[in-house]
Image (cartoon, rainbow, N blue to C red; front, side, top):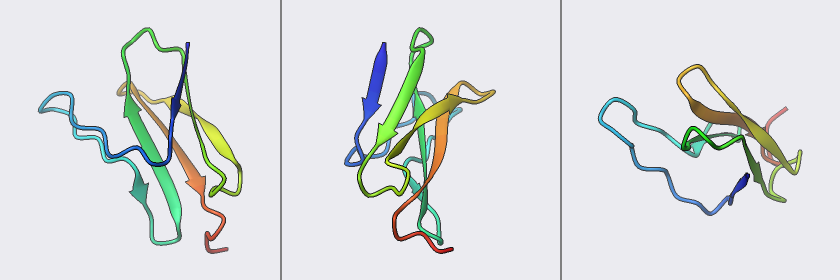
Length: 78
């Protein structure tokens, strides 16, 4: 199963009171961190947009079960 997250997606609401997910998180140097909580059966997550110098990226599931990735916008500071 492939889940695609668009750049226009608004922040995901907290699934319970223990986890507040901040996404997207825009850093001072124009990098952007995306985070997403999915059902356990989801095997991969990808985010993509032409505003990122890399064109997009696959998110990786962290120890808390949250998918995340850090992308550089085409305007990112060197």
